[in-house]
Length: 188
Image (cartoon, rainbow, N blue to C red; front, top):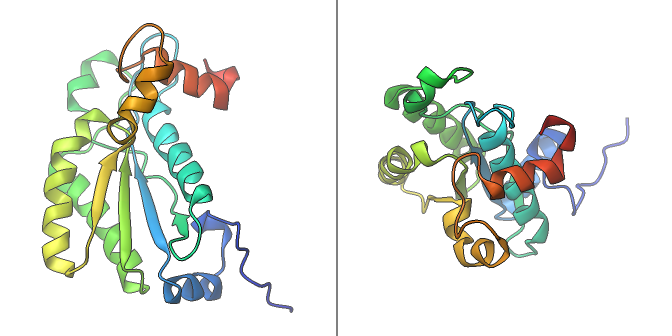
């Protein structure tokens, strides 16, 4: 079999082979780990909103990065801390210990493969406080410059400038509805 050369435009971890990923680690590639939630989003949106938008934002960010800081995106972690939505139906939640374990295992797996620039892209408000603590603890444990952020906080000014009904991303709002409508109109 012929080994394919690493695609310089491929940003999805799950589309690359192990040799291609080893090469990416040697090239100091940034790895983005999307983190979301599976929970209710009103009567008009599916439960995939938070993890799906974190994944899509991660893919688009990675596709715009150029050498020397190219990026790869792992599959999304579709569960987060959503206890506050359990009474509303359709929600699957983790507690802090489970989320810390899942995020920790993925970050440590990526680091064990030689990647040193790791960023967790959050797409769920209920994850923000816990994620800050998890990343701080992992940074100390792994001695790596780990980082995390929530996409709508990172792009707050840009998002606010295009909204008509509000000034920031809210739960099941104009922004989340518009983004999911653009990605998967059949789900809205």
